[in-house]
Picture 1 (cartoon, helix red, strand yellow):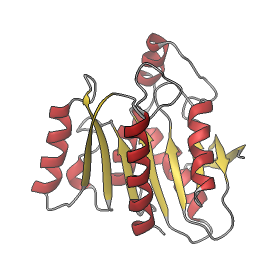
Picture 2 (cartoon, rainbow, N blue to C red):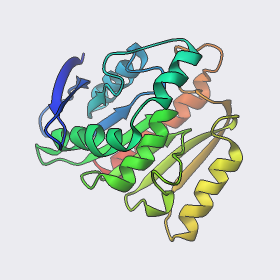
Picture 3 (cartoon, helix red, strand yellow):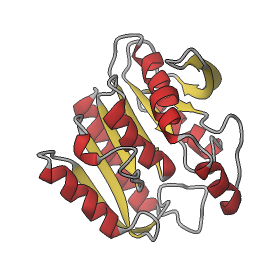
Amino acid sequence: MGSKIEFNRPDGGRIGGYYAKAGAGRPSVIVIQEWWGLNDQICGVADRFARAGYNALAPDLYAGRVTQDPDEANHLMTGLDFPGATHQDLRGAAQHLAADGNKVAVMGFCMGGALTIAAAVHVPELSAAVCFYGIPPAELASPADIKVPFQAHFANQDDWCTPAAADGLEKTMRDAGRDPEIFRYDAGHGFFNERRADVYDANCATQAWERMMSFLGNTIG
């Protein structure tokens, strides 16, 4: 359904991405990859958004590099310029999608979930954010500074984005006067990824998708 495109960053550079269109005049969603890269699964999520009525753009944060090896994925993630990805790649995506005047949300998984929070703090063009099992380091962004409507999905059996970390995020936001929607699932990290049979949980993924669709319908249309 979608296609590869290039779009502008605020600094004048260019970045590639996968763009699935629902049609002119529709609200939009930025889809942020896991640490594996912009793979077929993430492109499939963008396509799914388009079928649901949202234009969806997945920026290629690794510039074409994709892996299935956890060690290589960790190497790619730790080598990513997270502030640059936030202020340039993701803001460029938001500006590209907002050009038609409609609202833009951001969502992402794992590494992309952490960047979702960073974007929600630092990218002013965004109107809502949905995070799946990812939290950024405090020096990149504090959840207390999220001003847009925010929804998050965490796994109870997660040793990377742990339940304690999820509890800390919720407390930080509520102590700051925010009112996030936080959901927890009896599943493992990556439960939404249908390409990973070792962690995928169809029931939890379906429930999370339905909750996200309701949230986006109420926030960006």
